[in-house]
Structures are given as C-alpha cells and as structure tokens.
Image (cartoon, rainbow, N blue to C red; front, side):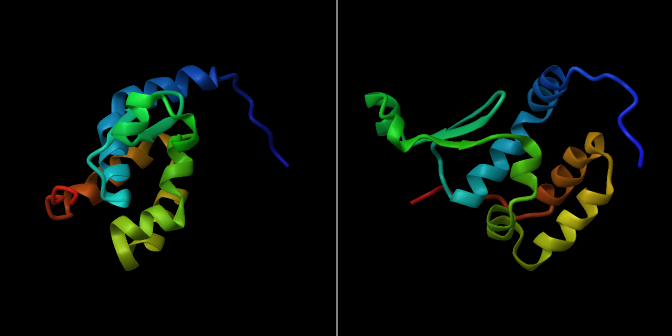
Length: 118
C-alpha cells in the first residue's frame, strides 16, 4: 500500500481551485437547481433564496462542501447532464483532480444556454 508522499496545503489548494474555476461551479449549481438565486463560491458552495438572505434565515442554508462533492453527486449531475452524467463522472474519477474542472467546463459548454428560472 502506498501513501501520500508530499505535503499539500489542502485548504489553499481548494481555495485556489474554487477561485480559478468558480464560474463553472456556479453554472453547474444554477443548472441543477434551475435557479437564478445568489450562488457564492468559497471554501464551501452556498446558494440562498433571496428572501432568506434578506432575513438572514439560516434554516434555508443550502451548502455543498467542496468541488468534488458537487462533481460526483449523482442527483446534481443527472439533473444537469441526464444519461451522460455517470459516464462523465467516471471520466472525471479517472482524471487527476487538477484536470476535472476542465472536463466539466467542456461538458457544460456543450449544453444549450440555460433559460431563466420561472
């Protein structure tokens, strides 16, 4: 059995990834939930109904903890990519973490423009 041989500052890696690829994750969340709500990308991904933000109602907090949790969530990915979701997740699982965001960006770019939420 092998082990990780290099030290990585994981929080900085995640923050850099989210900063560089934030729009990809925002687009994915908006498509999956068919929402025009505010989507924030940071250490966690959060989307909030406008009225909850105005009232600071934390009971409506919707938080997805990391990019890979989002990218490998079957419900979210199926909502966005339909039957292509599982093959896409398999492709990303085989790829290094540093290339997954490019894979999902390319897949999102092939989708039709998202209609405004009702």
